Length: 169
Image: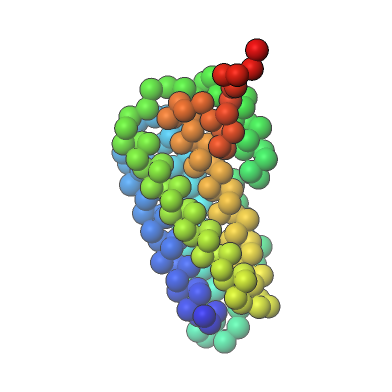
């Protein structure tokens, strides 16, 4: 895959994810869920703007400049730590639709992250550098969505790890 094809495909992925977050933001009834969806929608909108500017640069010059792509999402480790602190506060009764939206978002984030990982493996130079930052950011998004999904579903798990052990004495 060429850098131009990769950028166009990345724009398609980011558009799909952004659409899910915007729709979820409109439908969410949980205060924390609305905040999470709003932050993630804003993040994805920034990704779209960045990718479109890289594609425009590529089409005009035949090269890309990899700029520092910022994120408001903390690292996965920081998210895990905060989730432990907030678990009691987040356990509101969720609407079934919010769980569905979060599940859809999680699946799209995984698909998008896998695409970026593939681009890092296939491309070299600036293309590899560009998409490696997206891998980091999308993994943070995935961690946040999974944490919110765990919280609202009340399944007793944080990041696939049990919060309690029934066999512990």
